[in-house]
Amino acid sequence: MTPKTAAKKTAERAAPAVPYFNFRRLSGGRVLLSNDSGAFIELSGGEFSLYSSGRLKPGALRSELEAKGFVRDMMDFDGLASAASRRNSFLNSGPGLHILVMTLRCNHKCLYCQSSAVGADGGRETDMSRKVARRSVDFALQSPAQGITIEFQGGEPLLNWDTLSDTVLYARAAAKKKKKEVSLALVSNFSLMTEAKAKFLLENEVSICTSLDGPAALHNANRVYACGNSHASTGRWLEYFSGKAARQSPDYKVFRPSALLTVTRASLGQGKKIVDEYVRLGLEDVFLRPLAPIGFARKLWPKIGYTPAEFSAFYRSTLEYILKLNAAGTRMRERNAMILLAKMLNGADPGFLDLRCPCGAAIGQVAYNYNGDLYTCDEGRMVGWEGNDLFKAGNVLKDSYRDVILSPAARACAAASTLDSQPQCSRCAYKPYCGVCPVYNYETQGSLWGDMASSGRCSLYLDLFDTLAELLKKPASAAILKGWVAK
Image 1 (tube, rainbow, N blue to C red):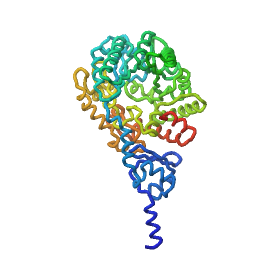
Image 2 (image 1 turned 135 degrees about the vertical axis):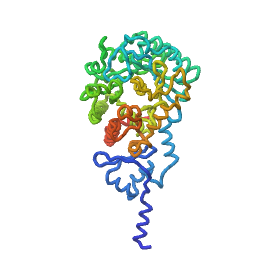
Image 3 (image 1 turned 60 degrees about the vertical axis):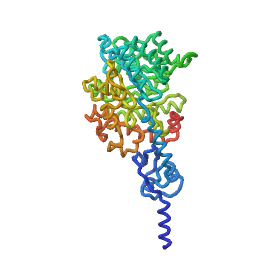
């Protein structure tokens, strides 16, 4: 063997054998690689060329690639399998979120309503009865998940206070009897909150969430309330519950209240004002949630909707403002970033059911309509209200837990949201951290599987992931973002 041939053989042995991976080209010529264990790494264009062709020489970068499972001959299969298992641990338990729709009646007329709400002055035929509510609790407690959350929604759930308060007490007693961990949560617009109701909720450790779309003019324009000032009521009770949480009680735990933001066309360009309002009211998290064309929002989309690119521009500028506030000492986090970063950096499932594979429909959550009808998710319930029961999984008064979980609706959603069966998703670098929504696909594209190449939701999340990947390359912003999800 000639010296030249021997040198060539030595180089071939030193070159890394490349296993399967997905990649995405980012701005500046950089390339993000990921594998099925959830590990990722960014390379320059030149580094990627050397790596992908098997010509990368030993060194620090090669060692990092080996440690993350990107070199075939140096893969720790037990470790990689353990990471993948931890990332998908939700598949080993049953639905943890159980949404009880206490009534469809509501005293607001929100432009983007997805709750199939009816007028507050209507009859009580859309109120959940005590029988249905208690049966729903019993059904939820059959989930094999050790800990579950029962969330009271509407309409406006305080309009059915007698049933709501009875269900809180019943759930606490039933959970104690079954030795089950149960968290209780209320989603309310606060317009009907009173000191007596607040006291009951606090003493029974019910966490509180409301909607806050920003400063008064924006909030009241989105969340129309003919009987008063929605923003004023929301602000008052947020401050009330925040004050209680700050002082705590020796007898029960008081949770900090939270608020949900729905971004409409009117929100674009007001990111700074929105965040400032959250800071003013003492909130520490803001969730820049994109509007989905489902329910009333779909009918008003030309007025209140926007393109994925418009939302992405809003998101980036608002997130950069939040990072500036953090750098100046103001504590404020953005929940989209926290969810995605928990997946990317910690290899953890943060419990956001819309970004699971398969999605959380039926296997992660169940929605209980006022009449006992069960749906794979709350968005699926909205489709049912419009006259299409494609996502109906059964009825709490008629069907067994097993029949509901194994219903055709549950199976179809699981199959449609498995990313390996989605041609574009299966090759995406963000596959380990993402998920599709069959309801969104059906409502926007007429198919549970949808077409990701033309999906607005897919485009939107690609931009979110790209934004975070770019910010993680900047030391100052990376330190803040990593701090948000530090274990």
